[in-house]
Image (cartoon, rainbow, N blue to C red; front, side, top):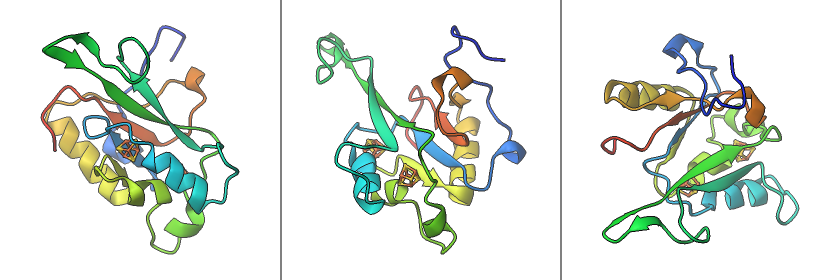
Length: 152
Ligand code: SF4
Ligand code: SF4
């Protein structure tokens, strides 16, 4: 069950993951928006239309400043997949990666079997594995790992 007080849904077991699962490793994400722009250009979307956009989490004053006080500064990002995301089915049916996954310069995204492997590795290393709750109206089958652990 989810409600407006829930910030993440249950952690899906490996056999609950769909074949077209997308994994987002928030520890690796640097908020560069390359995924969003790759999707926009690859799928021929109009300028400024995004199937995935990138939220800034934990920023300080303004979205481009970290939270905290020097030297204890922190900032993180979360790619948010909208319902419009097609999971690049025409590409993945041909064995290609989705535009967003292929373009990420930090290997923060993974797709399909590679995603399932990374999810399990992150889980074993103590990461919180979660999906967004229903009230977020996000794309199904997108799984996140929290940033509070060692990098994989
Ligand atoms: S997921 Fe990758 S491409 Fe997208 S904002 Fe994060 S680091 Fe950049
Ligand atoms: S999977 Fe494809 S359609 Fe969905 S956000 Fe990534 S590039 Fe866009």
